[in-house]
Structures are given as C-alpha cells and as structure tokens.
Image (cartoon, rainbow, N blue to C red):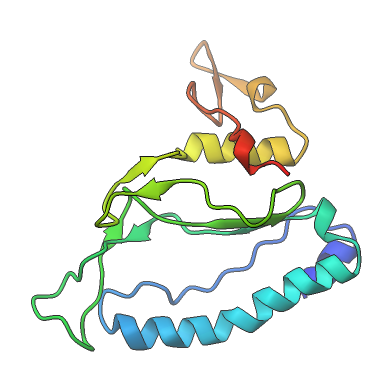
Length: 163
C-alpha cells in the first residue's frame, strides 16, 4: 500500500507497528516483530527501486528512543525485557539521496552512550529536510518575538548521510 501511495504522488506516507515496547519477554516479542516486518520492508525497498522511485523517496526506519543494553528485570531469561533508553539507539535510511551501506555513529562498549559521530535529533531533522530539498535554516517562525525553527539553534545537516 505504501508503494502504491508513493506511485500516486502522496508526499508523506507513515507506517506504524506499535508492538515494540518490550519491557518483558524481549526475546519472543522481538523475534515475532522482526518476522512481521522484515519481508514487507524489504519488499517496499525492492519495489521502489524496481519502479525507479527509490531515488526520489526517502525511507526512514526509526523510533523515538532505543532500549537499554541491559535487562530491566531482576532475573535474566525469557521473561526479561529492556527499558526505554535515549542515550544511544539506531535507525536507518534508504533512497532519496542517502549514501547506502554505511554506519554513522558508535556507542561505548556497553551500548549505553553514543560516543562517535553522534547525531542529535535536531541534526537528524536538518538532514531529513535537506534530503527533502528544504533548507532548515530558512524554516523559521515567530515565537514570542523570537525567530525559532524546528531544528532549534543547533541542528546541522549530517553530510556523511548524502550519497
């Protein structure tokens, strides 16, 4: 359905899968969710590429937070889960000017904190806007007498993302 919407000129398509909140039963829940989404997301990328739409479509696979690298439960095992974590997590991009086959950023040895090539949410937003052909520095609005923008005062385009 997402591919068909893109073919018909829809400029923004959002797909949600809401069962990723694994505070318990991480192993079984993650295995099930991966089974549900793996083939469809691969098919979407392949379909867009075959139809010549991937170069003009930015695909983002993301979330609003990551998961702690350790279990949140007292006892590890099949019932264990992981809590929300904002200090180091992953997302991926494809198509629309994104350079394929690279990893940007690195966490410490525990996966607790991003330490190299950190990308702040404002940088991510600036980069997406750039991929959409928009200059995030020009997208301002007046808020209580101050010029403000979505990417705050810190957002920078992550040049390494570009193909």
